[in-house]
Every structure is written in structure tokens, then in C-alpha cells.
Amino acid sequence: MTTTLLAKRAATGSLLGLALGDALGFPTEFNDVPSILAKCGPWREMELPKPAFVTDDTQMTLALGRALRTAMDRGPLGPEALERAARAEYVAWSRSPENNRAPGRTCLVACDLLTKERRPWQDASQIHSKGCGANMRVAPLGLVPRLSDEQRAGAAQLQAALTHGHPTALTAADLTAHAVRLLAQGVEPLGLVDRLRSYAYENRGRYHTRWLGDLWRYSQDASPEVFISRGWDECLSALDRLQQALSHPSPETDPCLATGEGWIAEEALATGLLCFLLFPDEPVTALRRGACTSGDSDSIACLAGAFAGAYLGPAAWPTEWADRIEYQGDLVSLGALWDA
Image 1 (cartoon, rainbow, N blue to C red):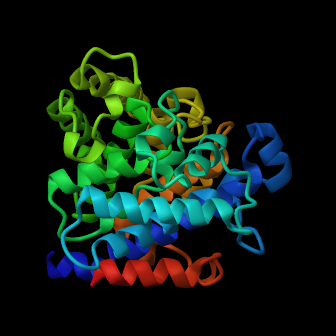
Image 2: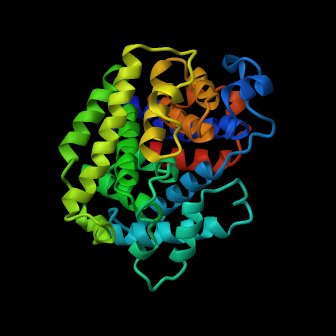
Image 3: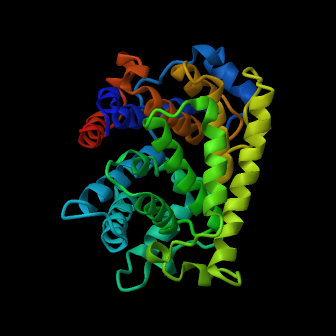
């Protein structure tokens, strides 16, 4: 990692941005845009709530971050160590009294099954779910240094598959981690969508057996390649819609109308990216645009914040906001570990 990237502190910026977007969108989730405007006023002036509570999106991001720290404590990241650590962290999250932020049903069902330690994790995976919960939490895998491309992709898909087994959940999580990594490395936002499309085409037929085992057999697909290509094709369609929206940008229009409401994985990725790419040099505006949407506003703003923070670092965020975000100490500690 170069001196410039270290100085930028991409990991700290991304984790703080993710949590800030999550907190900003928490009160507006499940509301349509007119209701949000009536409640919050003009969207470009939305303020961080007091207190600045987050949702399960940030809680599970921290769970994955802790799992990665544990899994890499004694050597290179591998599937067995990550599965054990992530399984333990996800189950602990599901049983925590702080898990009271309207968590997704898929995560709760899968975590209950993950408590049965002698069962393969694939038995817990909800094979037909591509809810956005799997890629809301994946940003740490774009921020951890010294991972190979195979480690990052395989781990991103495995952490998703522990709860969400649909191939689109896996590939959207992989793409999200890749986008965060590219932005942390300094890739210009203008070329980001083309880079993501190329990555999707390059990996379209690649099934990470070392990380996923026989997960594909739990579906109705004829082969692992057919299974995973379904996910990449849905993500490519979402990226097509994103590219179309960016060719005729309309910042005052609800982004969900162009790229989807974000309840499912590929739409959350595309709409979170749209909010960031409409305002690549105005990170707080990107968060506000994500929070003022008719869809899964906390998750959309959460992803927009992860992208903006990876690109710009913690200086992107108002100090008064960053200082009072819930779990601030945990977010900054993980960020400092990876920035160093």
C-alpha cells in the first residue's frame, strides 16, 4: 500500500461513512419520498439524527470485521478460519440484546441454523434469498490489506453465503467489496462502472469451490458454473441500468426509480453506487440522497457512505457527525488496524 493510500485512511473513512449513511437512513426506511420530505425537510439539508443510532447493517459489518481480525490472527485468510469466525460472530449478533433494529428475516433464520455447529454451514444458507443483507456488511473485505484477488472474492462470497445462498447475493457482495477496494486504491469514480462490468465478465463462469464447497448443489442448477453465472448476469443487468442512469443524471429524482429500491442485492449495489456517483466529491450530499429514497434507504445510504469514505477518507465526514455515531470506537479501531 502506498504512502498516499495510508495518508488517506480509506478503511476508517469507509467504515465511518457506512455507519453515517446507515444512521441517516434509519428513520426514513419504509417511507416514500413525500413522507420523508414532510418529516425531514429538504433532502439536501437532512441532518444526522440525535442520537445517531445505526441498524443491523452496521452491526453486521462490525461482526464481519471482528471475524476477519480473528481469522487472520494466525496466518493468511482461508475458508475454514473465516467460516468458524464469521459463524461465531453472526450467531453472537443474532443473540445480542442490541439486535433490535428490525433485522432481516433471512439473517435471523440462517443464524438460528448456524447455531447447530455439527451441521455444514451450507445447510443454514438460505439458497433462494438474495436480500441485500449480504452485501451491506461486506465492505471490510474491500479494506483489509494484503489479500489476494482470490481471497477477497472467495471470502466476500462465503461471508454472504452463510446467510444468503442465492448466486446474486454472492456476486453482488463480491462486486461491492471490489468496488470498495478500487476506490480505496484511488480509481477515479468516472471509470468505476466499466471496471466493475469487466470484473463481472471476467468472473462470470468462476465458482470458488475452495470457499463455497458444494453450495451450488442446494439449488436446481446443472453445474456450479451455471449457478454462479446466474448471479453475475443479474448484476450485469443492474450495472446496465446504473450506466443508463448516469448517462442522463437526474440528481433531484428518487434514485430508486432508475436502479431499484435496494431490497435485493443487485439493486442495493446499483442504487448505492448511483447515489455516490451522482456526487463523488460531495459525500454528505451522496448520503442524503441515499437516505431520501423510496426503498431500503438505510442500506442504500450505508453503501453510498462506504464507497465515498473509501474514496475520500475520513476527512469526507463532518467531525460533529463522526464523533457521535453509534459504535464510533469500534469503527475507528477496525479502520485504524487496516489503515496501518
